[in-house]
Amino acid sequence: NAGVTQTPKFRILKIGQSMTLQCTQDMNHNYMYWYRQDPGMGLKLIYYSVGAGITDKGEVPNGYNVSRSTTEDFPLRLELAAPSQTSVYFCASRSAWENQPQHFGDGTRLSIL
Amino acid sequence: KNQVEQSPQSLIILEGKNCTLQCNYTVSPFSNLRWYKQDTGRGPVSLTIMTFSENTKSNGRYTATLDADTKQSSLHITASQLSDSASYICVVTSPGFQKLVFGTGTRLLVSP
Image (cartoon, rainbow over all chains, first blue to last red; front, side, top):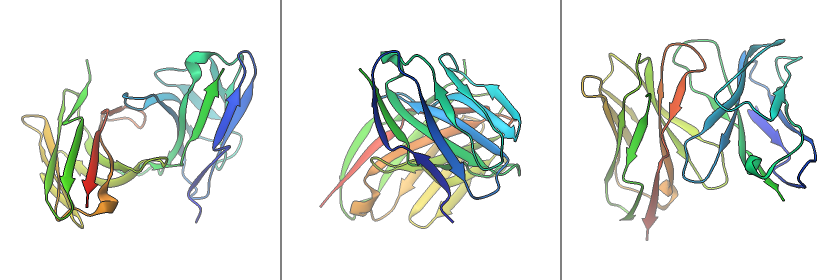
């Protein structure tokens, strides 16, 4: 099992560019999440999904979009990149059973210049 | 406001020594409390999950405690190893799959 796989690992974007951060999991988890982690801060929830075709906003959704067409994949789209979106982005998944841990990918380090 | 506060922010200990990390929270309602280990450049990995009725849970050399009355938790690391150098994150969950509040973590450095 690969777990949660994120690509790319690193990316530098120019202001105004767009890109998609990829996330796929092979554990057949219904719940998937996108977080951002800024230096000295706790992880902040951007978007989450409870199953294919169902997504909802988290704490900090502005400037991002998601889709969930399959159980395995949960891409995060940045439109019109801004310097404030410079961060490390983590995707996570969890089974629907109560009190189960989230499984995280190793992150995408994104710089907007 | 739902918050999770961890202390200390950072800690340096000698290899083989024990240490205890603290987590205080104001999150309500409460479902469970989790401790994660995050190695540099990696995603967090779950160490323990404790529900309201559990006050101690161990995972190898890691032992977590929970006092739901005072809303405090601790993570005790026994006989530290160099590989324990990482950030340790406390996360408190409310009922509902998306309601997790993350602490900012304690950065632990185990020195030889």
